[in-house]
Length: 64
Image (cartoon, rainbow, N blue to C red; front, side, top):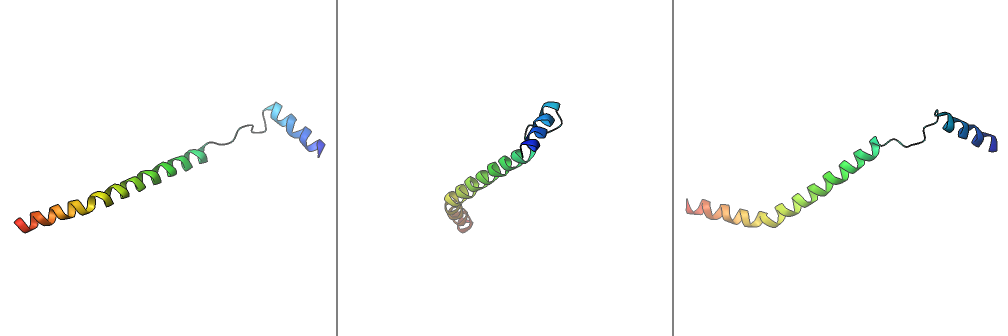
């Protein structure tokens, strides 16, 4: 076990072993979270204004 850790340390210092994580997957998750938050806000706004707009359009249709 100690020998494998020693080999990994040698690879890190030699620049062969990746020392940082890949960031592409993390950015994709962040974009998905932002998109879901925006869609939740949009649905909420439409629900709040939907009945008022529906009543307004019905009034216009009745006046015609």
